[in-house]
Length: 243
Image 1: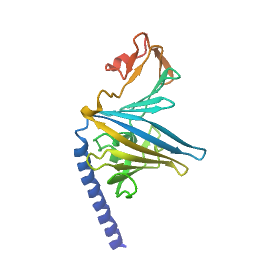
Image 2: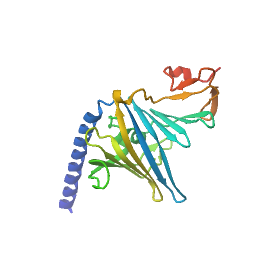
Image 3: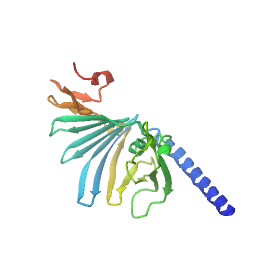
Image 4: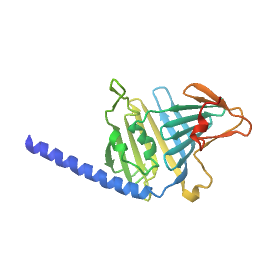
């Protein structure tokens, strides 16, 4: 039994060292990325249906991601732990704040270069992708138990598991596979990356026309006036409720 325990411990240390080496290389390859634009297609499978959507992604350093879905058009913008959901058909933006939970790091891993907090929330496993799929390197994230709140309740994970398939040159994801539960999964394919200057004028911002309602934490705080508005605003104080 002692020999078995030692063997398991040595194997665990070896795996941890391999992950450390990978993330050092990961951060070095990603550090130069200030902004990017890419297109994606997404297939979602649930017990009731299978759906497909397409759109584009814009990432801006530090830690801002815009996901614009087309037909129907809905845009999500994640700025640190604040989420904006813009539905132009409803003429409204819903804004809500997520807790400062390390699990959120999975939202940024596909495009960001920072990884320290990620390992607080996830077990990380490196694996070699199947030749039939894209990417030369892949990693699997499994949520670790988390507790929060005054009662120290367990926090439900965002998903059961996520696998990222990465390109060689910059470790940007060409495929993301999310397993929500045993009956639900999401497959995202990402392509046509344009990085830094090549991304042109793509911006992780919401440009809102006059008349759009801004709803923050379920409270209407503003109706956009003449000239429109852009969110997030450069001055955070400008997002305080109108008086």
